[in-house]
Image (cartoon, rainbow, N blue to C red; front, side, top):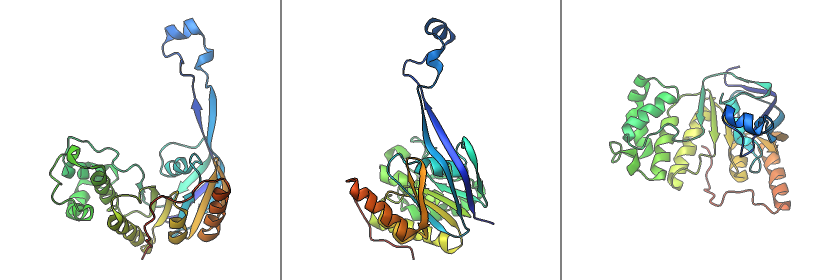
Length: 262
């Protein structure tokens, strides 16, 4: 099935080491082998299983440290699970760490070209869509300037514009919908809506329960690396909000644009 995501029983552990861990053979001989061992093993994900059908938009929600970003990176092929398997069917696009690979001394034009190639486009594809990328980012007056002269918001707009011009069958999005002002956020949501209308499968991580409830068909709820629920967006986000309220946490982002996909 093109555009489908199948995750079966995945687990991912991270190992923490002592701060005074030996780094040379001489230090090992003096201080012994014991400090080479991990001081602690932290399980970011434990036995997570779900399937996403083609064309569905699915949110991922959970408290900080729940494993949301780890899940998205594993689905995107950044690292491998310690157990279980992941199958992604279709061309993959990702809006994860916006601006990764950008260089402050290069111009916006040069960074857009590099970012597009890193994202999987050919040089010719980036060149053919370059004017559209610049227009989307609203950076026509600054595109020949070094990136170090850009504000952080301008950099994020350029990075999103580059990533938004990929034509994926599966799109991964990690907390990038706070890019720019409200008008630009609406433009970002409209582009994501265009992807969905073309049958793209979308996996979206956000702390914003209201946003996921409005945009997504389904929501996956993670708690301490384990799957709590996977079902209709309204039902799952309601359960999450109720739990966060009981814990005294606020399950919404501080700024909430009243946006919806077309």
